[in-house]
Length: 181
Image (cartoon, rainbow, N blue to C red; front, side, top):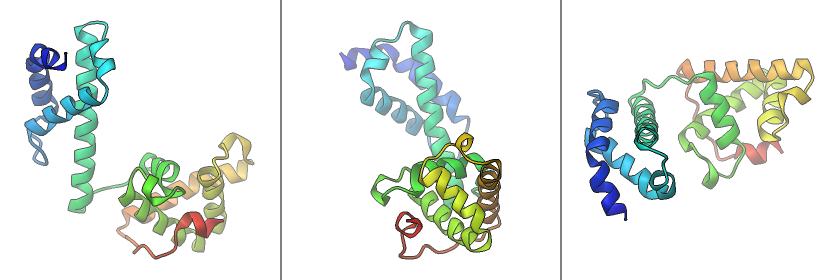
């Protein structure tokens, strides 16, 4: 069944792969194509049950786009040109910081954000506590006081600034999840 699917859609996947690649120097067109097919294999029902060709091609594009974004982020991170955005810091705080390391979605980001959070907690303890409350305890901003919610926003901005200033702090043996408790 998947072999027939492959043969039927191979040309579309190749075209989309070339379009998403756009001459990037951090990966090859074949890598993009492979990422699309890996996604098809991991989510076959979504692809096999697509309503029509346009929907299917949008799925291919989304898989290619996710791959290219991850590749660009990895390339930037390892080349030293990565710049954190507040949305990146929020994602890492939510998905990777106050969880076991094995469950962290972004281990490199976890190390950076944990170190920046420790530095922030020493300089601005109110922001550090507010961030833990929002992201460690999963308390929505709407359930916090206005001052706490502002401290969360300021804390995200502060961590973003620390990370982007090149103050890559070395991770220590202490896990933030245990340290915050």
